[in-house]
Image (cartoon, rainbow, N blue to C red; front, side):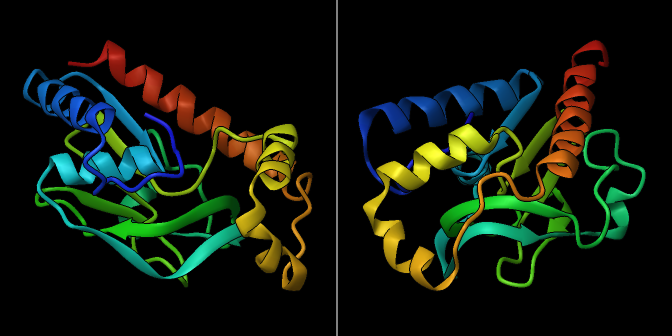
Length: 178
């Protein structure tokens, strides 16, 4: 499940259907990966609160893995200070029974694991410079942020691509477990 401009708290019919699919996947032990809004929906489906983050995170920002992330098959390649692309104004509480795997200075929940096959990440490992540029071009609300914090869509791409490959490859490997 990927991101979007809506809130996990919106009562939109397609979000309600997605929450039901997530709940079913959790019951049936199906691997799940939620990115940004997807992580917020995953957390909500698990009973956690989704709220406004103290400040929006938009742009390339460093994340910090927790000790539990060190040996994790999906997020173990993240190093302290690795920079990932962010574009969110909401966050979530850590779901009950989940293990926190990363945080940032501005957002206490950047990544979590539930069991061995369910992951949520607040940052955007799926983006490349073209996607970022498209978001910048289409989101007028970002203009004020960009005026004081210009975003280079190509910055940090090489390391972010390596993290993304390890993250997605590690998560796909969870399909063979269980």
